[in-house]
Length: 449
Ligand code: SF4
Ligand code: SF4
Image (cartoon, rainbow, N blue to C red; front, side, top):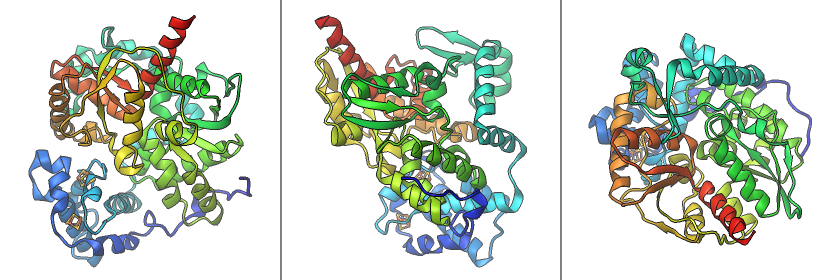
């Protein structure tokens, strides 16, 4: 679809991101039943009623009535002590949209007090994709100064002087992180990858995590699409999905990023948009629609792309009917449901169907595969102790399956799982499920060549 574009994010207002009173409808739906308490990962660790959704909603109500100040330090602390994992929303009988309340409050706080200087600096970089790309590449080439490598895990850990400084927010000497690549995904491929026989065209929104931290998984995704007759467009002008700034209340930047992405993907002429990350997919399916609802032009565009956005698993199972793989991949796999993939995009059966289709793969379910891993984007840094305790439960649940591999559909979960498995002495390999399918196709070719 192609229409005249609006000039800037300032043109869109009147959503709950701009006017806190618009979350009133969500607040009024809460009947204080406490069902949210049973599933909140933060409450499972903190055991503090103030961590539970219903308490946060009661505080939100008091702020709207004027009984509490929005920027009261305890109010702000409550608002940010949340992974925005949507678990409470899936267990709520009246379907309270707590994500809207949390995001509305964070945005209102930023409107009132501005962004802290460090967030402002980082988000300014995100707003300038070319500058951000240069900074990430510079960081990749210099990461050896602050981090040392672990070849077996394909990971890096902070060197001791840096670990001493970073220890209080989880960057201690035991921290394991994926390496920042010197050659990002979008620099490894042409903008269009065309298989010999094209059945359909789809544009791939890589997101920053696949682009900079897991480019091999991104290459696997492109390979699988091409293997299934999909002409893949990977526009270089795409930028961050905007979720990292949206959850910190920087609405202007989130809108700029969303608008640029929409214009960029519109220019590809593709009918479908494919993602390999639950947060990125959720942004296109839901957040852009909400963010741009006040702009008559971008509202229509956002709604258009929301309907055409697929996680790679749903695209393979519902749009192209993927070719059953024949190559043997010997692995006992357990699947971790990313919160944004399952609770946001409602994708959970399709990745499992893909895993079960791979010869040699045995799927073993965790006791609670859809419990949050504790990542929550920057929550892992801002609330490290709580995040680590949630991550520990997940690591133990993975271990009791006896699996040698844990697979998921979200790069941020992969990072959190990598660190927590290593901290608890567990050896499971962490992988995106699409990489196992790609491996099976490769094995098939190797044995028939
Ligand atoms: S489950 Fe829903 S209705 Fe019940 S207390 Fe929590 S938010 Fe309110
Ligand atoms: S979104 Fe997740 S962390 Fe936040 S209140 Fe709901 S269940 Fe708890």
